[in-house]
Image (tube, rainbow, N blue to C red; front, side):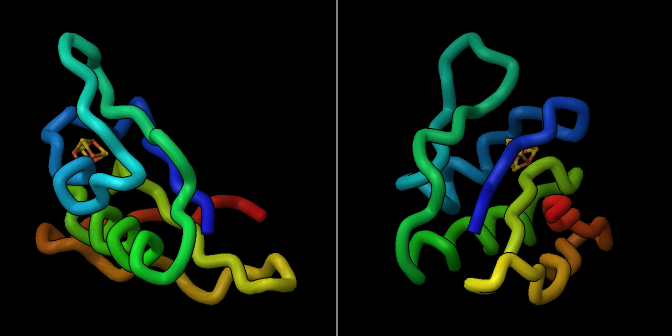
Length: 89
Ligand code: SF4
């Protein structure tokens, strides 16, 4: 899995850092949170998928590549109906 924050679609609400604290942190006085490390293991991957699902503007991207490098499916729609986008292969 690979996660990324899209600068254009992020309002710095802090939700992704709240949902995936091992992977994302808020940065005081910065415009964006920071990815501190890519998810390791199922628990962190699930936290990042949840962050992508709940990101209000679809700015938190989490791909779901399988071992062969293919993308399993898109991240489910968030509460507001937006869709987080899978990363390109
Ligand atoms: S949840 Fe989305 S909008 Fe909020 S800080 Fe994270 S990437 Fe930005």
